[in-house]
Length: 295
Image (tube, rainbow, N blue to C red; front, side):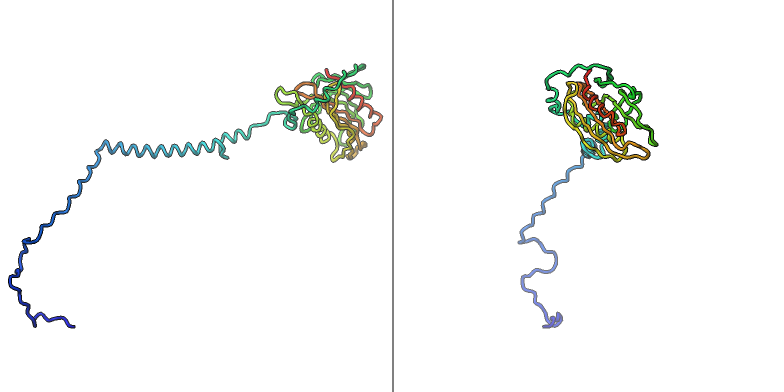
């Protein structure tokens, strides 16, 4: 079907039709105008706007401060970077070495020993008196002479400053001694006087073995017990050590370590040693232990 040709056909205007021109609204219902948009809110005036801005800025600043305080509290309470935690972690432990190694027991291991009946037998003869340690014990004649030095080597640094000794030999490593030495060593915290006698005694014996004998050495235990010395609770260890050192004739030694509870914050320590080259003095070890009396 083709497009009609406007020149080949005519279109008759119907009677009574409208002519071109202005079209009136006759017979057509009027259209109502669209509703008017609500008037825009007037912009806030200057003071109100400034108050609003201040409230916004204040809220932001408060949030920043709160976040900073939270971070600071986390650091103070437990953070690794907290200066307070570093200070607490680095605080030195000022307790005596024996108190750190052997805390006071809930029930003193020496309680049974201290209740043993009977007073110690009276003693006679010459005595070595150690006021600091709070004990006295038998004193011997030549070759034993008064001790005039201070030995305080070892982890515990027990200050042996009272007693007797004699030199048994001189070798490339120095002088070798037979000895009867006593000392007082801090063994409790604050005003506590209860001692874990076994723990303290073992610590002192280990210190002696490590510091006063050639290394390595082997130990033959002979006696290791909580007992009483002079009526006071004590721990006693007797042992024979075996060792070698270049130029040293002695290869063994009979020794004893005793720790005596003298009712103070310090414990009395008694150390007796006789090298194998002088076995004729082995009896001194037991005699000295049995002669101990509290002051």
